[in-house]
Length: 361
Image 1 (cartoon, rainbow, N blue to C red):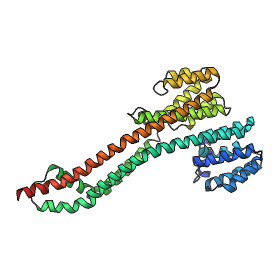
Image 2: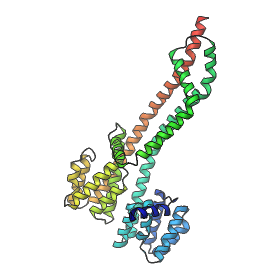
Image 3: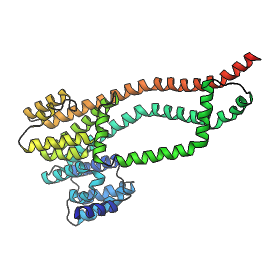
Image 4: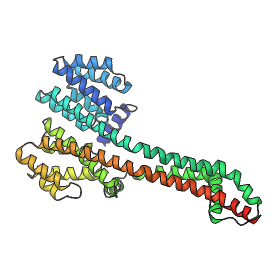
């Protein structure tokens, strides 16, 4: 009950605050530079506060400066904003403070966050053009059906002739959108709300994430994206000095996929019992390809696991980028063909009855 009340209190305290990945990059990079230059932490935070333009960061920094001036560690102050910064961010700063390597850890953090942001941007950039074409096609079709086609329908009806099936279908579809369009829109909104609520149930969300991983084409992108995030986060936490079990738990909490989250928590249990990471990965070939388990085994043997994982994260970053580029290149002509087919269908449905009537005159 107490944990529940604390969670509610924290949610209300942080309500309306938003920390973007760019805010995190700038904060960690600037603080790293100042820490390396030998500036005191409090003075560094005050300088960052004067330079920041984000309202959320201004409010957060005001509280952090107050906490640090009262003798708190930076990580302890950021702990109250863990839902905004994430476990990874707070724990890497905590280890950096305790080991006296705060500047190095902040630089690691900034570099890896930058890579994560760049990967996300590349994926969005690759898919945004096909998405725009699809939305434009849908919008033009609805506009034709709701505003243009109803003005032509009376002409066909006054001819008192049997209309082709394509024309009749368009008339019926146009009537449905015109008369029931609002009901359809409300229905879609209700379905979206129901789906969003269902995804809050962990079992349903887990099943959904599992289905995503094994879809044709998109499943490969989803898997590679999760592998890139998993290897990057685990590599970064290990490099910053966090122990393996804690690093695995932090990585699990940072992943959005419940499937990979569950797997990493199970790996943490195995390591706690004295096992290694690579044997478990070998048993899960569908989620962790053989290259991952083999490279991790090499890293464990050589004592260079963090660097091996960061190498793997760069590899999967490249894989995701190439796959999304190829996917976008495939989708663009496909969507254009669909768009042409839809416009052609509408044109045939309009022209066919007119042609038949002129032939009978």
